[in-house]
Length: 309
Image (cartoon, rainbow, N blue to C red):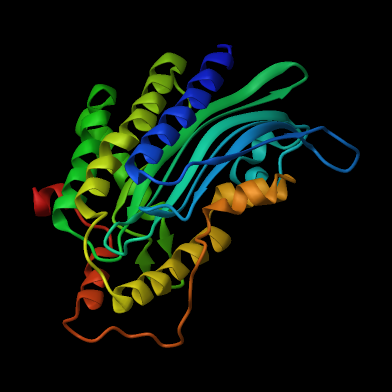
C-alpha cells in the first residue's frame, strides 16, 4: 500500500497556500491558528491532531475557517459504519483539509472545499482506502458570470481524469449531496463532489491535487469581482437569512460533521464551518420579481455550462 506521508504533506502545504492567498485577498485580517492534539484514552476511539485556522472580522471575510487534520481511531463512528458496513471493527486513519469562507459582502458567495484521504486496517492489513473531496459555491445574489467561471474551472481540472464524463458525474454527485430535502432546494450552484475514489492510487491522488489546487483558481476571480460591490441593510439581512440554510445542511445532512462529532473530534474545529452571524424568519417570502426572489431559480440542479456558456 502506498505511503500516506505524501498525501499528508500535500494537504498541510495546501492549507498554508490557501491561507496565504486568502490573507492577501482580504488585505486586513490574518488567520489565528490552534494546533491541537488528541491522545487515545479510555472511552474514546480518536487520536491524532491538526491545525485549525480562523480569520475573523476582515475587510472581505467576516469569517474564514480552514482546518488540516490527521486523525485515527480504533473503531468507526455509526455514520461511517452505516455508509460502509464492511468496515465495522476496522481501525482507521484520515487526513484532510476542509474550509468554509463566509464573506462580509452579500454579493460575494459563501464557499466550501474539502479534500481528504481515508484508509482502514484490520489485523495489520489494509482493507480499504479512498480519496474524497470537492468544492461548491453558495451565492445569495448570483451572477451568471461567476457561476460559469466556477463550473468552467471545475470542468477544466477534470480534463486529465476522464474529461467531460468525470465532470458530469462529480457535478451531478455535488447537486445530489448538497441538497436540502426538507427545503426542496440545493445548497447553492454546486461544483464537484466525490467520495470512495480508490481505483488507482497515483491517478486518484493526482485528481485530489487537481481539485485542491483548482479551488483558488475557481474562487479568487469571484472575490476580486464582487468584494467591493455596494450593498445595504436589505442585502445584509437576506444574507443572514440565507446563511440559516447553510447551518441547516451542515447540522442535519453533512457526513463530515456527523463523522467528526460521533468520533469524538474537536467540536470547535468541526463547527468552524458555521457562520458567525445568522438569522431565521418564519414564513419568509421574497417579493415577486425582486433580486432576492431570483435566487430560487438557481437552487436546483442545472446544466450551467450548457445554459450559460
